[in-house]
Image (cartoon, rainbow, N blue to C red):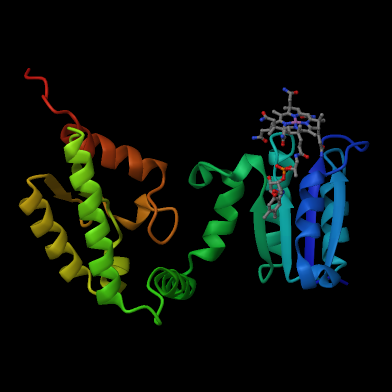
Length: 240
Ligand code: B12
């Protein structure tokens, strides 16, 4: 029995998964509650699932690589179907980017982005970004002072500076402390320094454009770039 199962499908039986071994080696005190289960891509899905669930895990970590993404997708979807309470974590080179486009991630997201989870995830993110023990006003003053120094330096080097606030979902914006004050200060500072300031925080911010609390997914980035940002980056826009 193991609360945490780290697993992957190797390219061939003869190969070993170094990635899982790195993770095991860094589990610290959790290592006694973890097991490593390796298979190869020729293994029957039913055997893999049976071996994993026989451990009665709470968390299953799957190493995803180009050679196993198809069977791993099947494995994750089946695990979610049979044991929906399982927390599944994906890692490895094939799931580090473009996660919003990948079928293997969809099964996880669909489970994760239930309304009851969204609230909890948002709160964790806000608590992380704005820790309670930090004096938010003092922190904003320090941020602005450093930012202004940076702008001054760039202007002294004749570098064109554009300040943008990227899109953020409205529900998240509302949770961020002191944002209106921050926005006003930023705008005033930009005017004082004579630099362009564009506040895009409330445009292109449909929930479907984000892959997590506050990061745009690929569709969101492309849409934001094409419809809002691109024209601001061109110093002398072409005239048709
Ligand atoms: C060994 C190896 C192989 C072995 C297979 C090993 C195995 N276990 O089966 C062999 C030689 C068979 C092989 C073949 C191929 N390989 Co190869 N291979 C590697 C290599 C050199 C080392 C992998 C490794 O062990 N790295 C060291 C470990 C520690 O790193 P890691 O595996 O990335 O794991 C870390 C993170 O990814 C993460 N992580 C991993 N799993 C998990 C799981 C969880 C839950 C979490 C949270 C995190 C996590 O944490 C780990 C620690 O930091 C890498 C290059 C590299 N430098 O990584 C390429 C690499 C993995 N291979 C690659 C490719 C393209 C191939 C081939 C398709 C090449 C080809 N054209 O034929 C074939 C596919 C074979 C097939 N049958 O389809 C690409 C994969 C790209 C991708 N998106 O997956 C890589 C990244 C090389 C590259 N830069 O292009 N390969």
